[in-house]
Length: 357
Ligand code: M6R
Image 1: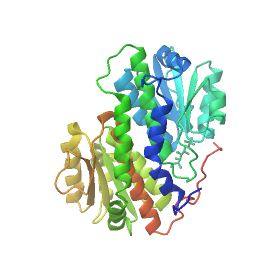
Image 2: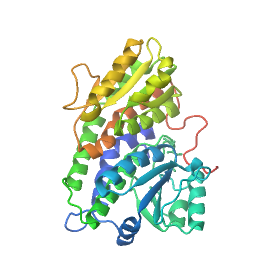
Image 3: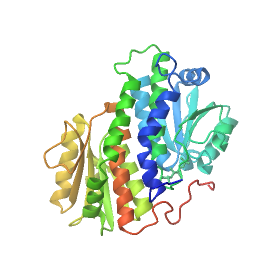
Image 4: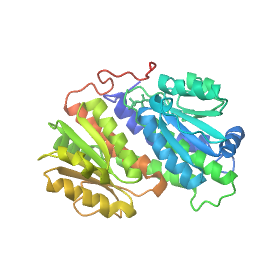
């Protein structure tokens, strides 16, 4: 039930700290160490390459998952859109592991790939919010995201839960391979939960940003580099599906290769700036669009922020930054849809689980 909340989406955004804490407790052993099921650990470690398959928001989580697994567990990962995978199948490595990410566990596009790879005899793991769902039953292994029911069509807590579980999968695999970790994953995820709370308490500021930037616009852009790029793809998807504003996520450096032609006076451009190595270059992209009349909104990370940034996110471990930076984007999308009188929980033309190909 949504209780005192006007919409499920807002309730589900607010539930994210709790979901992260749930995940921490479910994937911890009695000594406080990250621990996955042994069969899953073995399957991950037997793989010479991981293929992540998913759709929509779950695909966006898979992009971050690729970085987590490659950085922490040092295993090569490819992330693919489920609906395209079979048309343009990459060469498959000798010992692949297929990981399906799906909130509902019912997405037909993902299931199509699962059926095909099972026919080829490859092992499959499903990361889902619904154990017992089709994708969970038909895969060899399941990891539960413990998000609780997600009712709003726009996925929020499932996305952050998926990334949290992917980070633990990466940590578990790193440990099994004998790698020394230079951070405490449980502690860092707990910090994430606390920062999520701080962000959920800043609704007024985010509602104001939505009002100032998105009340009347027809379109808008989201830009970021490196892992911020993956998060802006999610920010744009969130905004377009519930507010019907045409929103595109772009890699900061790619804009000048065509899309910058769309920038007009007053076009809102949200820029995510949370990583030191790209801080100046993404800010350079902001200058480029501002010079062409855009109205930029910079969301940055504490410590890397400049004086005029519109919103600053507290610092968390660099690998886990996407789990917190998405929250302002979710809330901005929520308020933009609300102000424009849209049906936030049930946007037009969309279903919660997409069971047709
Ligand atoms: O249930 P799934 O995670 O497999 O669903 C995949 C997409 O249909 C889903 O993430 C969709 O993009 C959401 N409406 C996004 O908010």
